[in-house]
Length: 504
Image (tube, rainbow, N blue to C red; front, side, top):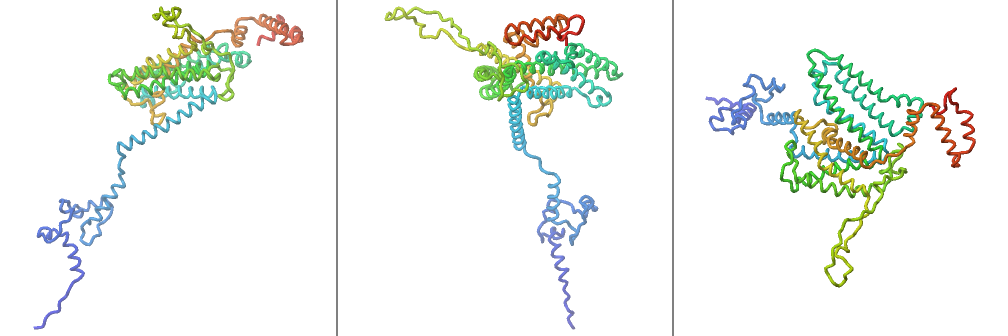
């Protein structure tokens, strides 16, 4: 019997040997290593009716028709690329801290840069702050769906803002720059009738609001009307007094702002150092120890800062030149509160207890007088208000945010929230500084602008001409001007029959 030749199928054996490693029969017989995928009980993608091909969009090209481990790794890595991992809590806090620190230095640079550049730049900053704060406050009560259906809701909000700013800014400009506004032919009618013009502008807005009322939206519209007026009073009106502080002297702007910032910093430091007792429920992190500790620290720093600022006329002089800056400076007669005074100390002399020197007393070694500027006493009151009263402006803002269930008023300042979050205590502090200055510090005396205003508004044209001639004669007698001035006025200043030269 002849032997049949042995036919070997090397390719088939190789293929079978490759597939036997993952064959279910091999796994059952224990002759092959268990695949990780099969050991976990995972179903074959080809046995799921081609679902894997539909999801991945990639046909199975393995010789055995089974998905390999490499393919599984590629698919998992693809999913990882498609869904990036979120940063950890530590990374989020780190990024927030960096952003907050950067914008803190940016705000400090803008603040000091504008203050040293001149009063007009600080006024621009204050104007921008009050507009942004107004926008943030009216936004938290707005309902976008209703605002879209009511065409003039936002328009009226901004109209009332513009009307209020026109009235307040006009009052400041007319008061502090009478000598410029009242002698200008174009500005004179606006200055003399400024309040009536402002009132009529408001009335126009009021009539327009009533005419825009729509049935079914009354509650929302009246809520917006009341909310807008509250924002105007709490933000725009108080910011107006901060602007008046700038006109009275840079120190009356810089000092209140610095006291509030100092108190806020030391309240935090003292609170985390030895704070134990909660101060107020609306702000759980505030402590009594931090509140009182910040008061003491604010008074100490206020004394030192005031002593430094009083040495510069750029800070203590009222504005008489809007183009002045820290380098050009200002010239004025200083307010008496900045001039040192000597005060006697009420120390009662006690009898001498040692018989060696009968004429000496026990209290002779103590000073009997103290030389200090009155401003140092005023700073005590301002520091106390900044520490004990101004923080309640922040508590009020916290309660307002809790009412509307929001964390910040906005995101105007990256890392710090909204502008209102940073200015909540500054508005009431600036208002207090103006009232305190006008009540206890301001010196009221006749000014050129005041005299011109009285002459224009209180005298007739003939009386104004008589004042001009009288002043000219006085100046001639003092040798300030020549005698030809009175001669020229006598020939050209017409009274009665013509227009008086001083009538404007």
